[in-house]
Figure 1 (cartoon, helix red, strand yellow):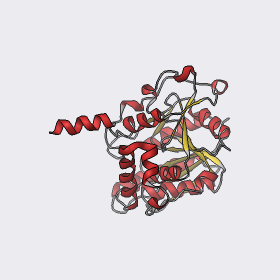
Figure 2 (spheres, rainbow, N blue to C red):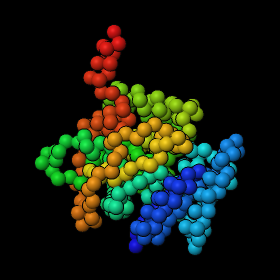
Figure 3 (cartoon, rainbow, N blue to C red):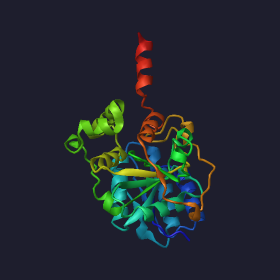
Figure 4 (cartoon, rainbow, N blue to C red):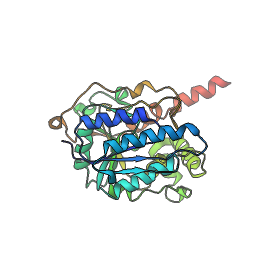
Amino acid sequence: MFDRPILVTGFNRPDLLMLVLEKIKKANCTTVYIALDGPRVDIESDFAKVAECRKIAMIFNSKNRERNRLLESNLGCGLAMSSAIDWFFSNVDAGIIIEDDIDFSESFLQTMDYLLSEFKDDIRVGSVTGLNPISKYLPTKPHGSDYSFIMHRFFSSWGWATWKDRWQNYEYDISNWELGISRITLWKRFGILGARFLTNKFNSVSSGKIDTWDYQFMAMQIRYDLKCVAPIANQIGNLGFRDDATHTKSEQHESMDLDQVIHGPKELKSEIYSSKIINSIYLNIHYRVPTITQRLIEVVSRR
């Protein structure tokens, strides 16, 4: 039995929702909340797909209907997700959040449960995740240590977990984000190019150009100087890189492949590797922000 609460979110992809719920059921998870956005009124195909998703959710939680949040109308990606997590943490103190297109390794749930317990009272940590898209690019055993986890300044909405007291600091509206995060802070923590990247993202979110919720969580982590802890091996894949995705319509990057490393609970230990190198690699590989050298080469090549 796996007792840690899980929130599964979805919308109009019944095939993916079925896959993730079957995987969760196989892991004998006892406390599963399901939140589904409603159909878009101007997209006729949504109605049948959303109805199928609702049917899947009702069957899965047939004995616990109160754990289903099935919206009648569409809120959109940002509001649907943020309000679903609000609802989740109105019922639990800590939990795992999995979107319908997330694939995960056998060790993911155990890792999240371990990290939620291990860092419950650690004020440095705002979230934990199974995603490590830079696992293939990390230095081998830095400082001679056989570390189990890395710590970085970013946030992953793909297979992650947090606590109610951290989520309470979350703000969906970040139109005044610069009042809480100075440019100097961004420069010091992410470098010039990283600061520019994040500034553009936060401005796009606050102006409504991007309908999302996850950059707001990252802004919260930056404001309160919180970090994210991830396993050394990547435990998360994403099956949603396809035409009906909200954001991930392009081809999945090779760094998102699941690592074939399985850790049991007894093998987990809270030895963490944390350095500016990790932040630089994460920016370059996951967010595809060029390094200073790459940027200079790009500029010179244009001349």
